[in-house]
Image (tube, rainbow, N blue to C red; front, side):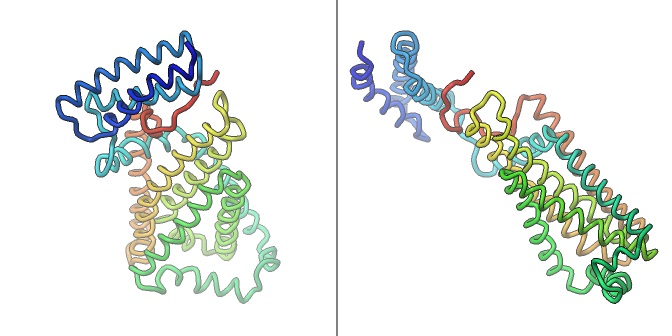
Length: 331
């Protein structure tokens, strides 16, 4: 049989099946019609695959049958609050958990460079003068570093910090497709932490530095490291796509990056609240650091518990199969 003739004869049934599969509600007659057309289309697909091999038509019919099957068994797509709940309990923690090696590698590299700068500037405080004049150094050590956390009302400062950190995380995440962009953002953040920390430690104000940076910094830097890790992984998806074509590999990584970006909004909100209300508070240093440590432990526990459970259930954090684009099978 000629393929064009076959398509002309059967396309009306396929179009009708597509219409029925997209409806939210079906009456009894329509449900029976959907099942009948589903069986006919399944037969058509088998015929195409065995006698009229055509990859595009096979893909089209496979997608149509997938949507029809979901409609027939009453499995609606996840939307609204259900989608939000799935994102919080499955998709976001699964993606972060599955990429923990990337995140840990980014964290070790960044913190390693910052720590090296602290030690080097502590041993060679005169090197700071090549970056800042003595007056600026004294101002930073004696006033500006501590005042930064208490100079503005807590509510507006929390909003400012949240937006600023969200911008940094977003740049690290979405510039990942270039690879270089994420590395630049990460390096800039690493140098800032290393330089300020080196100046404070070299001026014998290390206790003040860690007492103010750790309460919010543990969770804040974790969010930045996760964003950078997911960004680099997105860029690597087109450099080394594996068995998939580059477009498909990059699309999957991009969808997962979008999920992570939404999840990190909440993480950075918590970090901003800690930075605005806990860091400059009158609590003892051990109490402020303890609150930050509890927030960090809670986040890591959440990712490990929900992420491991999702991976065990074969979740990937990507869209369900019937909501993705139709793909031609690849070897």
